[in-house]
Length: 162
Image (tube, rainbow, N blue to C red; front, side, top):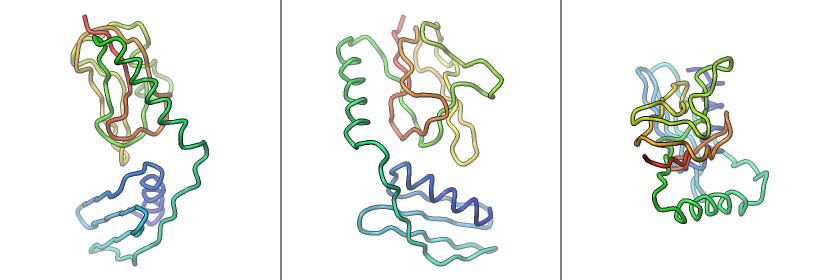
């Protein structure tokens, strides 16, 4: 892991809104802490040793109420029809609807899926994690755009179980 990878990791964590991220590899241990009172990075390792670095959070691009309003609207829609199941992100990362740019998406709205079918992949730390359906049913809604960052427990899909 070089300094550019560490800088990219710092930017990713700052954008994700996570309070603390710890990464341990063979020869390096990184802890990134963000928050209103302590924003610093601690990195130690056999190969490299870096001093704590101050992290400033990027200025919000859109008003803060737009994202929660969209999530609240999604939750209200899901609550209106109690039989719908919401599939949520188990990790922080980047959401991808297809395995490669030239491949077709895993699922589309209206597709029928079985329990265990791959719905999407989420890239986290250069690892692609397949997100599988928890239930059998029909895809009612895809809540995230391709190549968008997602947070832990963020709704991704709405499925009508069958």
